[in-house]
Amino acid sequence: MRLPDKFESSMRALLGEEADAFFATYAMPRTTGLRLNGLKLGRAEYEARFGAAGLPIPWADGGLYTDEDDRPGKHLHYYLGLYYIQEPSAMLPAELLDVRPGHRVLDLCAAPGGKSTQLASKLQGRGLLVANDNAAERTKALAKNVERACAAGVVVTNEEPSRLADAFGAFFDRVLVDAPCSGEGMFRKDEDMIREWERHSVERCSGMQRDILREAARLVAPGGKLLYSTCTFSPLENEGSIARFLAEHPEFDVERIDAPAEWGLGPGRPDWLAGDETAGLAGERLASLAGAARVWPHRSRGEGHFAALLVRREGAGGTPGPRASELAASSGTQAAGTPAAERAAAAMTPPGAVRSLAERDGSDDEPWSFPAMAEPEAGAATAASAAGAKRGARPEPSPRGRRGAADSGSRARGKNAASPEADMRDKLLAFVRDHLPDWKPRGKLYARGEQLYLQPEELPALGRLRLVRPGWLLGSATKHRFEPSQALAMGLKMTDAARTLRLAAGEADASRYMKGETLQPDPGRIVGRDGSPESGRGWTLVCIDGFPAGWGRWDGHLLKNELLPGWRWL
Ligand SMILES: C[S@@+](CC[C@H](N)C(=O)[O-])C[C@H]1O[C@@H](n2cnc3c(N)ncnc32)[C@H](O)[C@@H]1O
Image (cartoon, rainbow, N blue to C red; front, side, top):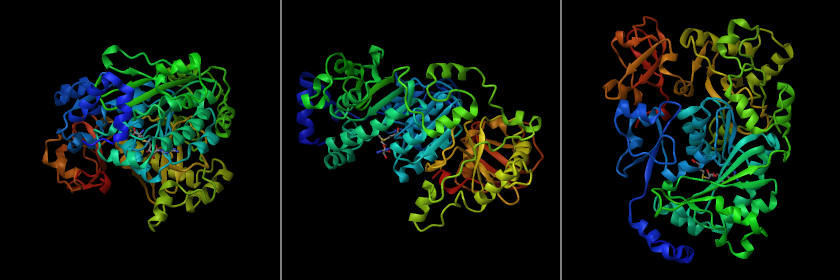
């Protein structure tokens, strides 16, 4: 591999005696890995059922090393969302962020979603994750990866950080800034990164990082944490970005990353900054940058990475955004400014205020309502509709379109059962009663066109933001019925569905289903929740190795395949 001369000479100067060991790694195979999806299963269960999958990655829950010539992306289990393919060092930042169930989490630079899916598994379905990226095209992969792994509790946005900061204010307990960077740590993984490095200068990346970090600071609740990470070795983009951040934000401190010695991490290197790169920081505050962590390929089994954990002091009041203060007023709880730790602890106990669908259905005069059905301002296009318009395709129905206009009327009518909202909800409820009898999701409904989403209860109204996925897409309420989505299937458990076809990955019908073909299973294979034959017809959850793969429609003879083309196994 031919490394750029400028890169080589600066790394030799920084590493001194260690430089030879560092450069020797470029003749070795790159490191590869996968991370089991903790929302579906853990390592013990995976290995007990499917055999050993690789050596554990020491810093990542469910992380396993793979061999370069393994092809985990070709396996059906990948399509079922049982794991995400991720470079081992890239699993470190989300582990360090200390995300717990109930937290409000923001992944500010999230596409294509490796760390978002990891953060979502830490939340275990409690709390909220906003996964954002400012590149519209990249949010498509982000949304799909989230839907494959864990769409419940996740909102995908396509925004500039400043607009998120204006909307949310100091709302989040945890913020991840996995920043765009010069990618020096990925040269061994992807030689294209060398060409990219030659095109994008370290200085340009450092400017982008400054702008993103400035806005990120506004989004962290007092007592909350911000994890900054890059996949580059450049001191300017790593310690330099954090030095400038600390100089501009006295309310933040570095929290030392105390990793076990066997992880092989190196410290942050404030001593590598040139005088004009320290942003005037000096003394203990400059020295605190040593509490960051560097992954070195000659010390750990992983590509190059940097991580710094920053904590916003308790009582360092941020500005609650208009949306966050709305939430505080409406919920009667203190939304912004409440110590994050207290709220996280409260979230660990079952939240009585958050009622399940089953509890609402029947016991409430407005079951599973639309309490915060916010609509984007006229002219604020969704990312999907903007992308469609660019390609000249028919844009997704506007939220202020046919349904939206009627919705405004329905709000004026209040609880009128004949409102379009109530009609959509009733179709969904009828589907749930028939097909998912004991399913107990948490959240509130949100409608966009015909599509119905489930949002986390504590998500404030997001009217002006570009929403790629305003929540978990449950399906569409069409004129005659509710049609469940692929995202709904992926977020269910096999035992949630009243009717299933249960296949094993090795069966011909499993690959035929995943390729989009109609199936003709033995009717005895269509079973109910307890595994006994089921005589009904209609929507059927197709499961492979015990995990949902998608929907089919059973007519007693044939199973019509409802797997969308983009979800097929090629
Ligand atoms: C290193 S990648 C993120 C990888 C991702 N965290 C993952 O684990 O899959 C950096 C991302 O930052 C996004 N980005 C660049 N500038 C941004 C900005 N100003 N605001 C938000 N995202 C930005 C890029 O589009 C890119 O997807």
